[in-house]
Image (cartoon, rainbow, N blue to C red; front, side, top):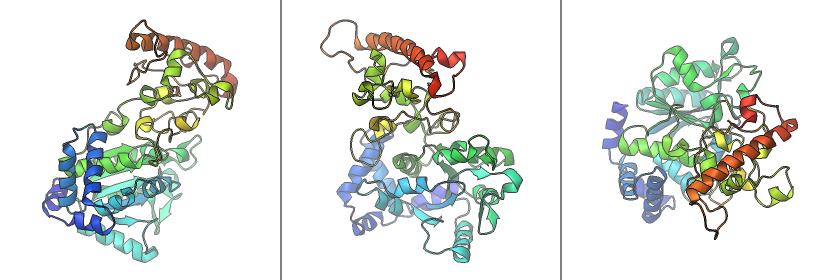
Length: 386
Ligand code: SF4
């Protein structure tokens, strides 16, 4: 990693000109970098430093390997409707190899991949989307005559760092759902089994939020190291809290107001979706605050009226039945201590949230038993909402 930073951080590029040619003004670029700083939980002034690093550094080479996936991770990156993101992502990094986006194909593409790997050995970021099939020596996914398993080993050992983007690369995702016929395996497990020491960052999501990916790359460019990770190798700035902590429906959970069926009165009023199987209480992600597609509030699954299905949490998304009740692990107060009954005097919002939260869990647990017909019955622990 040291070589990567020294080589590319020292050479001043001409990023601002490149951005300008692509319709991104200096002002927009600085605004964007300030937004990234705040998103990372840094003071706004750090935006200037991020801008400086992004503009001064030679674009870091990125090779992108797609295995068992649906192309949703690439789609989410390219279809972000932020006015400049798609331009910035292509101007900030040097995307050397990406099977979906390359103009060339076949022999030409594979020769380019090998050339780029040789020239940037030990300095490139490898992004992997999709899970890696390992059954029968990985024959279920082949690219240019090589298995994805062999390609991951070849490309991974020569990378500076690896970003496993999406739930498939992070946890196994859809292809690993029971009975996992291809032996779909996440990147970090392959590295562990083969003794590959290159650091792996997981950016789970189905699809992942593109800003979580871009901010991780920008952090790396600016501070010459990876952002702080949690015990699942996810950046803490994006996956540090559970969805339940920041959900706009949380006051309804705390007050014991739940939708019981899709389309019922509670559902139409925007009540909490816990009893419809929302996995927000056990899923770490920033979906409620970062949202998707830059179209304003409500643009995330729970915002549109569908329960969170836990795609960013190992052992929840693609593992638990969609409508089975979530395990409420930590009854933390919501981030904003929203007033449940505005205007009424009494206990403080914090105490009230906690108290009504306990009531919410109890009611939720009772509801879980009532809706057991919607999914698996769940064990005693789940039914008690523990
Ligand atoms: S259970 Fe789901 S819908 Fe209800 S408050 Fe928590 S995250 Fe939001």
